[in-house]
Structure formats: C-alpha cells, structure tokens
Image 1 (cartoon, helix red, strand yellow):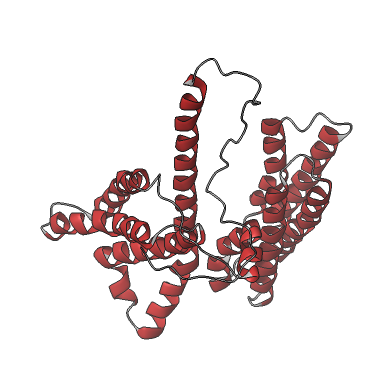
Image 2 (cartoon, rainbow, N blue to C red):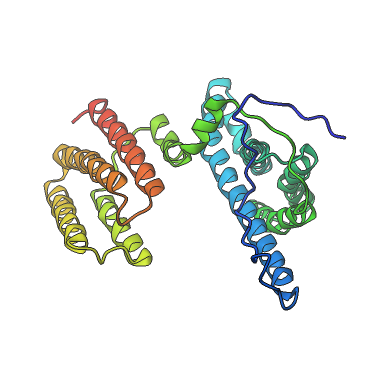
Length: 309
C-alpha cells in the first residue's frame, strides 16, 4: 500500500473532482430495468474526466503565470538569460512550470503520486521526443514549441483515462490550505498580475470596455438580465465606462493614464456590489474581478508615479 502524508484538516472527506449523482429510487418504487443506472454511470465518469482535465489545464496555466516571471528575474540576476532563451531550454522550463502547477493541484485533489508522476511525464516526454529532430535541424523553434504542446494533449488524456477509476488517497489538509483553496478566484486574479508587477505599465484606455462588457456577455449567457432594472443598470454602467474610455483616448498623456487607473479601480466597487447581491454574474467571477481590478489599478498607479511625465 502506498504511504501517504497526512495533513491537518477538517473531518470532511476529500471532495471528488466533480459531483456524483446520488439520487436513488424509493424502495417501494420498482425499477423496470437497470438500463438507467448503467447509462448514468458512464456519463458521470465522463464528466469527472473532463472536469479533471480542465482543472489540470488551469493548474498548468497558473504554474506558467506564476513561475515564468521568476525565471526571467533569476536569469537576469545570474547572467543566464541568453541560455534560458534558447528554444530547447525554454521548452523544458515551460514543461517544469506546468508540472509544478499540475503537481500542487493533483496532490490537493488527493491523487496518488504515481498518477502525478505519469502526468509530469506527459509534460516532458513530448518535448524530449521533439528535441532529437530539432537538434538534427529538421524542426524550427516554433515547431518545437507547438508540436510539444499538441503531443501533450493526448499524453495527458491517456494518463487521465488510465487513472480515472483510482480511489483518492487519504489527505487531511490544514485549515489555511482549505481557506486558500476556497479563494481560488482571488488567487487566479493575482497570478494574472504577476508579470505586470515585475514590469509595471499602464493599459490601453480601450481595455476599460472589457469591464462592463464582461458583465453583459455573462448576463446574457446566464439569462440573468431580466430582473427589474437589471438590464438598465448594466447599460448605464456600459455608458459610463465608454464615456471614460473616450475621454482618456482624447486626452492622451498622463491624464489618460490616470483615467485608466481610476476606471479600473472604480470598477472594483461595481464588482463588490455584484458580489454582495449575487446578481448577473456568479460570485466567483465577481471575486475574481474585484481582486484583478484593484491589483491592476495599483500596478498602473505605481507605473505612473515611477515614470517621468
């Protein structure tokens, strides 16, 4: 039996990657055939598999976003930036970043170490295979990166299918870890701003149109714009940020920079209101937006204050 590390956590069991249907017929109600449960089981298994693959993709992206800037800083400090920029080294560094993010999340999801190791191999092996024709001059740098990512997809799928029926290991987590995991939208928003903290700058004024636009698109997709005054409020918000955007474009210069920073920061208040009333967008999206808006506004203010007018 595999030895597993135990963590202090609540007494609740480790959640499965996706909810499993638990509805059962009443004892007195006869079931005509066993076809329904048999059909439901594969569907539930496919949902868990797709959910697991989606989580892996997000964890890999998070690893790249968080560790990518750190590699750049380390390379500059150690004088090996040129070495890290070489295609074969950059490919292996990217595989490492994705593996770190994937490993952290798979262990949080209580996967066995053997599954984690095999998924890590799915990150590295495609690139290692393509290094041979690249060294032989048969592949270019772009083909190396693109081919490695394309081969990675079926490799991940094979590992996920191989372990889809595996029983999770016993993992008990510290309450701090559980609390941080529940705040994953905020963590994802902070990860997206890591690169800007390393190299602060001011976004284009046109990016402010994304702020109200996202709420309208999600509201239409979820059909949550039909309540009293909901659509009118969203359109009013759109009009306000369109006006701020146009003023910033016409003003230009330092005034435009301050308007963009103010526009993103003001939208954080909009996010807080929607997070509290739970209307239009999911609370997780509102939480993500408020952290992202505040972080980006802070980065832009830092950029404005540290650059000459």
